[in-house]
Length: 255
Image (cartoon, rainbow, N blue to C red):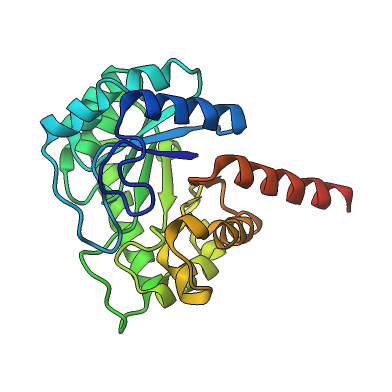
């Protein structure tokens, strides 16, 4: 899953793809590099705070010149939003997957929309703020259990749900590492797992570097997540991530 932020304030590439032509070109490059899904977001959900809230109307205005063109590239497009109104607009204009960073626990309309449209939905763990005193893995598990109950009540088909432990969101760097280390444990929910470790702050806590210099750490985290059972990785650096995953798979197949 390639990341396309059409925002001015995303933590890693804020403003780079706010221009529609630049965004569409970036999506085209990601698809050429091997992205199976393009994840388009028009409101920063910066995992460490500081993002400016955006209205649904403004979010749609940012998406309008970009999302239909990205959908026309021929790979599935997911819409990264926590608003049902934006999600519905995106589905009407070419998106085929929902990606809710609040795991169906903020806007109840998203669960109803996913059920009505029969589309896949990524359910991500999140917290309003990090609490270093809690057992973060247990917190992720409890959150997933609540989200799956919300989904079931709304009529979302179980086979349409992907779980994302939300690396960096509402977590200290140490908790993000603990969550990544527990990837295999989340398989007990019987749903595919998505891991988005790309450029996250926990990498800086291990090997100091600004967001755009965290490629090595991002690839290491994603390779280990896949080895532990993750089905999807969400990355900014698609070409390098695809190459790493393909080489790792080739080595494993040669054993």
